[in-house]
Image (cartoon, rainbow over all chains, first blue to last red; front, side, top):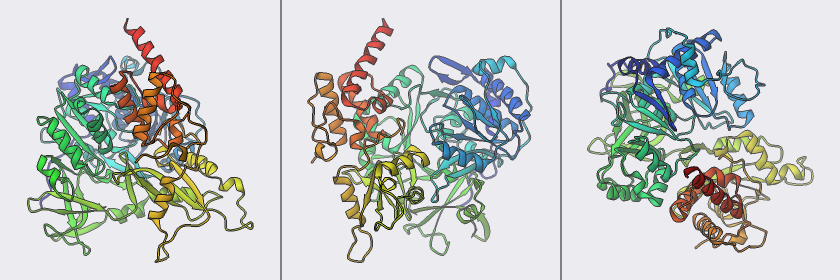
Length: 528
Length: 98
């Protein structure tokens, strides 16, 4: 299968935005409550930021971390970083301090953008001046963007890693921009608007911002922390929102609780986890005129890899709704165990090639080589990403997802490596043989996380009663892990139930944890 | 079949005092699949997740007509406090609209 759109040069993110500022300076780029920020203002503010940051060492080859809440100013700063030739990395301000430190040490930045509070970090910090975008426009510092190729790194996304270290996925400009534009995804560009809902460190944050901003559309900030059906109704009716991305679990919730909240939208994209055929069917019956797209793809190939315009018939496919066909600038290959292309109907590993591929995992060259190998395809070497997902092509050339090989689960759109939780838990003094697992809701879908560990064998074990107390274990995990990885249930057991084969009986563990009172009574931090 | 509340909390069940508390307790019990939830019970007693908080707030909004934010549930996690928060926010919004 030939590479789609491979010959076409994809623009740089900030150049695309600047282009819109030139063509239609008064077009609205950002809406934050009643604040309207034009493309002209955004681009001018970005240049001022770039000048400031460049003086502090930001430039090609650098990564500039941002630690701040979402705001129009954040977008201007990100564009400023890009203009200097550096890549930006959004760190979640709610992450535990230790996780932030680990990532900052990994990046070793010349400068960190941190909006508020005292700074005790090792690295130099740039605090954006008061006055916001308007102030930056007034200061009006010109800046000639550094020359760079579309393959230059633009951003770092963070996902769960299998050791204690979070995986930073370094993504180039072309990976972001390949999806949007005249032959890109529908619903992005002048006259279109998307609400900004996704978590800061994720690739879908880039989708919801650069999707519209590189195409000339509008980004609508949600002033609350969470999107509710009522919030969606409001932004559709008063802020012009017409294109929406929702993670599967949120999509299902909205369909359950307030299916009419989607009225007025022109396209809905959903994904991040396997879509529920019943919920898709329900949406399509209620809103036959609103295109609903399944979006599939790991962060390692930037945001989306395939899309499928869903139909009622798709809901009857016994193995699940199809994930569709590759997006622009992207190729998908299903490989068998000998790295040969699978025939249609045969299952294999889904591998991805093309402009969406990340350049590397931050600070992990060995893992990068392992997950992004060069393989021989039709006589030529091609760089691919091995997703670890199993899939197959059907007779019509449509891709179907068939599950994962390893111990990664998705809960509420979060990609969770169970091994990362176990690694953190095993590092604590009072635990051993930690097992992390999802607890399923009655419908069989993973709902939340549990951690069990073995209590000390005897009095000779140095770990004291305090160390082995589940409350303490839970509290320590909160200091090591971001909220979405902290298990809701933590239990210490004298022994694990085993099956007839002598292996840990995971089904029994699941039942023990699900039916009994949770050992952890501590109230977690407010923002999960 | 719902879970029994007593599997999850030590303290005694306290009957919700008024209509708002009753509705909130009922909605939380339904979403978390508990047979009942008392007015002094906390969202965290039942290992509530952020997705469940969103669902609770969506139902509160559509059934009670009160605006509800998941962050309010995270900080006012006891049923009686959450019900109180809903009402005070509702009053504030009503005043602002006058």
